[in-house]
Structures are given as structure tokens and as C-alpha cells.
Amino acid sequence: MNVIAAEVEGEVYGMTANAFMSVSLDPKLIVISIGDQAKMLDRIRQSGTFSVNVLSCEQQEDSMRFAGQKELKINLNSTAWVRRRS
Picture 1 (cartoon, one colour):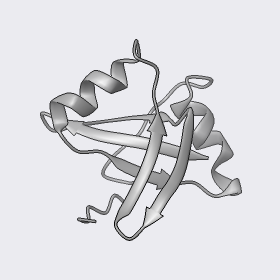
Picture 2 (spheres, rainbow, N blue to C red):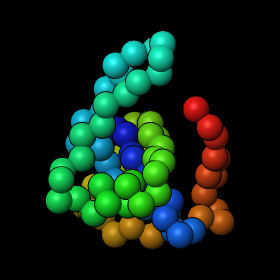
Picture 3 (cartoon, one colour):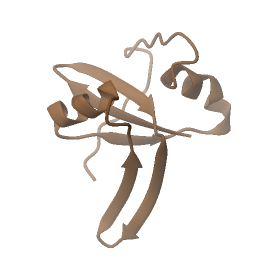
Picture 4 (cartoon, rainbow, N blue to C red):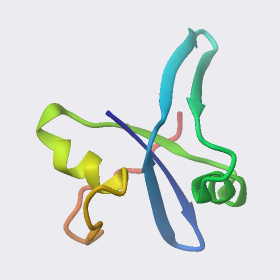
């Protein structure tokens, strides 16, 4: 499962990706699919950047939260967030 995230005005937003695939390694290109009515699309446009987070099978409950199937409560102080440039 992949979670797409973007930061807008200090708040981090995320959603599970409808589709994600690698297009090219050189240059590094990917494709993500987000519905045109999804709030996340506007947040990515506002941010100008986004991240792709690959979850392990042990993180199924997390993926369900980002998919809106469970209540999403994230304490950013207790979660290991790492910012990197690609």
C-alpha cells in the first residue's frame, strides 16, 4: 500500500494512492492516480510537493486510516517523519 502525503501551512495530509507506478529510473518518474474531486489533489497543488510512502504489510491498519476506513489520529511527535529531497 502507498500513502501520498503533502504539507500545507504546517499540517501534513495523507491518503492512500488509488494507483502508483514507476515509469522510469533515469530520470526518476512516477505516476500517481488521484480522483479530480479528492481534497488531496488541491492540497498537493497548494504544497507544490508530495511524498510517496510505502507501507509494509504490518501497517495495514495505518493504510485503512488513510483510506478513510478507520478514524485517523496521528501524533506527529511520536511518529518517525523523515523529510528528504529526491
